[in-house]
Amino acid sequence: MKKNKFLLVSLCFITIFLVQPQNFQFLKSAFTQNDLASQLNISSSPEEKNGELGNTHHTQNEELKTKVFDGKNQVIVVNDRAQFTAEELSLKNGSWEKYSNLDFLNRVGIAEAMLGQELMPTNEREDISSVKPTGWKNKKILFNGKEDYLYNRSHLIGFQLSGENANMKNLFIGTRALNANFDKEQSSMVYYENMVANYVKETNHHVRYRVTPIFKNVELVARGIRMEAQSVEDDTISFDIYIFNIQPGYDINYLTGTSKKLQ
Image (cartoon, rainbow, N blue to C red; front, side, top):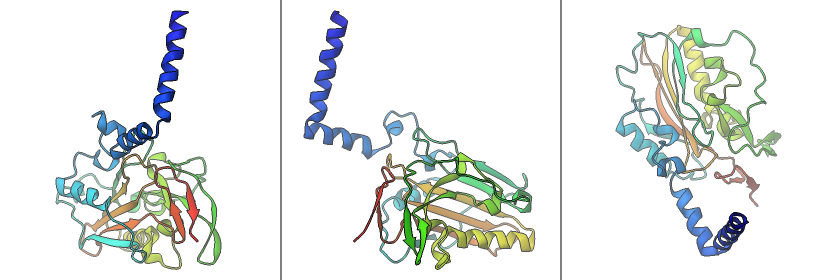
């Protein structure tokens, strides 16, 4: 009896504490300044989990979190050329791909690969609708004068490059404008994916590839995607770019995935 009474009093106290505006704002601030796992010292952010990456790469990723879309340039250049080391460009293991484990919020992390024809699909793409990435609150929209969807199940490493279908470690929420803007391809991932795919098919060469989703704090939707690629046997392909995960005419709540149309 005493135990139940103590539990009831405790619940009442906690409820009273939480409904106070100042207390609620304090807790909200505390839990959105950094990832909870980072605060508890049990995990790094998704893009920092790969310990092989250098300090410069981490610093640049942190800087990308502060970038704000200017309303015009959805793609910005991080470095004029890809910054892979000689070891990272080694072909000693042939073609391969590697995906980060999902973090404590089920968010995707860095995806890396040595792309070659061996990884490219030989069958048609399968259904991936069973995967619902973090923040999946989709809706119909008008884009480029046509009915479309705000969010796509976007591949970190595109299907045409990897043959990956419903791989939860390779799918994130990408806006239609980020994933495949066919009226302005150079502002979306598909332009760079096609560039790499066509090069590999035509030359049978390899491309070192890395895609990093950039999340802020405990947000469920990535602010953008960093894409890096370097052709190995020659110097035809070399880019290091960042694409903002935005949709023209819509305001996205990156913490929850909800959105609203701008007036």
